[in-house]
Length: 583
Image (tube, rainbow, N blue to C red; front, top):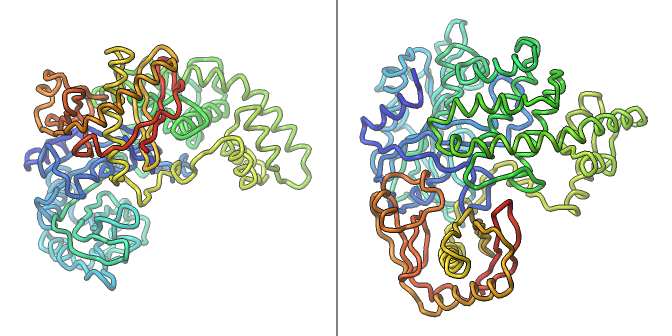
């Protein structure tokens, strides 16, 4: 059984439209480095914006979470994972959602009902206990003894501090050969959560007031890796069919078996799979010392270090061999994996060459260092030298230090690192903030300004200029575009003047919804056409710009103010970057 395909087939039969997985790198959402959940790209639609594909949606979504990075190496944690999800945007609610989930588990996957239990929201001072969900579960045959009411920290969802929110119901499976307890205890680790149905029926205002939402949404998520482990009867995710070929390849290149080398093999398998997906993303991320590039570098280097622990020859192409297995496994589901295969292999090869050059020297330096220390503490200066001279991420130093009973002054290192280069720790933890998917007034203006900048560059530089990425905050915009040269002062001046002319002309901004093929035929441009569903929104600005886009946008360009280019620089090979503000 192909679980992804079975899930989509089931929900399509119930009137849902399959939408493509959003990219791993979120567009214009600086609050997170990666999409961390299936619902994250849909936040504007959960807030009430109309989705071009309608009110019932389903997909399998690529996700990266870094909060569990230190747990990688155990049986169940992953940095990259796939989330199966279905949504109702103001259409069906609790009864249908719970029934659909129950029927998929018991009738499609044939999971025995006596292995299932659920949690529901216990309520708080503002919101009543969710007896509605509990009674629906009972009507489907779940015993009241298998229904647990849990508080806000367990069964309540909100994206940040304010906005749409609501209780959820989580479905648990008894993963053990021991007798199944009659009464469900959520603290008993033999019960594992397999599916979460979130019911967004309230809105939380900045003053803390809770009101009912006019549009009640359902957002569900089921982690593919976990449910496959359940169905295949193992408590080690890395022993499932998802990982079988990848682990087998690691065994082959290391000439060692998985048994006895589980931790290093899990880390290598997980980190290379994640590195393949990050470097294949259309955003064109390359290993670096900031943001997503920093995470990519850290994953590849940690995999290489565990390859060394398994005594894999560092100068062989073992990373690429494992990456090719990952690519083959996923290329039919995610087009960028196939299209960008050469880029992925190039990223891994180049980073391996860079790191291998310094790893041997760094390990010798580290070994000398720990022998010379009496107090078992590596100072911030010593940790920074390992980072700056030998390319050791601080996490690698900490990991190696802990193995030998040493501590590292990580706080001191962070301050020293901050002087050297700013790195957003909050974002790299992948946590939601209040600004998630922000659609404030300034962000909306900057979004429209990117369309004008794209159009102006096509006039000034040439029609072969295409957008390669953008990042927007309330303070500024960053725009990456294909270009083989540094812009001259004259080119920058002309581009800025043209954008400002179109702003002065107060051009109308119009949106129409149409099939994706028709939009392309009409001349509408799209950065990554594959990520859009079959129906798309096309934004036209006067007669100067026509792009497929998710929005949001102003109504007239005159609302934007004055456009000013602050900086133009290289982003990566063949890609330039403009930073600009609106005054």
